[in-house]
Length: 392
Image 1 (cartoon, rainbow, N blue to C red):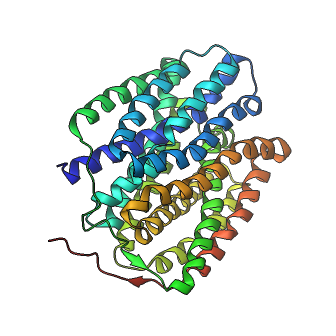
Image 2: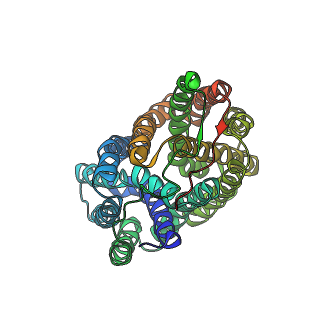
């Protein structure tokens, strides 16, 4: 029988790797462009197939997690995504780059429907564990910008992919030796932990769809664009890729702290109580960021990542609270299919909006999109809390 703490630790590490791997390119593209003789707006769209696979693949991986084995799927995740990162370090043409980034997206699609369902299955306090899991994902985002900037500056962009790829494969081998397949259907965490009136369930589904599309698109756009935004707008502070990575990482740390705080709040308050005030953060901060630079931009960016990452925790907890064990991976698969498909489209949207009017146009467009998060929070019905069933 697996130790819940050990399983959750490995799954948290996988969340770190998942976001780290998907965002290496966003930071490395700044130095890859000159090396490959391509402009930023020309090179960035090569990441689009990978982000689409990140979302579309979740339908199959979530189904396999429920019907086959979540543990086996996580072994495939670690080994596959590690080898895919290594392959990016050896590409010679844009086509090869697109194929390697696509492979990262395919294997990255395993984590969220499978790994998040594992967290819910083993968690004693769902909100706290979801918050901590979000912190690990956020640290992956932050570390990706930091490590890629440092490695890219001193060893070259290829090693920014190869080094984490090798470490991930090694971790996958340790995971395979430490965790066994286990059926969790009889545990106290197997049942849904909260519910709403049956006549109001459509409001939950509608609110989830609206907020997932709006937040996933914005979340991905911000994480992809932030390194380039800082490179342009913080020129008076620094031109060092490594220091820009440190600044971006520091901003993301605030997002990590927000996810932990939101997770703790969700253990004591209903989703609507937490989601409604949180939904008002993103739109004004994005609008302000459109015209700011230097220190004011850094401060407003902290507000943006706090709002976006906090919303992600609410969305994940919503699925975990309202679904039972046998359907949980598939429920997360649908949630992430919708979210990451929208997020995949955001990469091309960022490039197009940047060409149309730079970051002013891009950030204002996403500020308008985030008004939908407010509508989604208002739509949410009251939650009827039910105690988890006791197992003899």
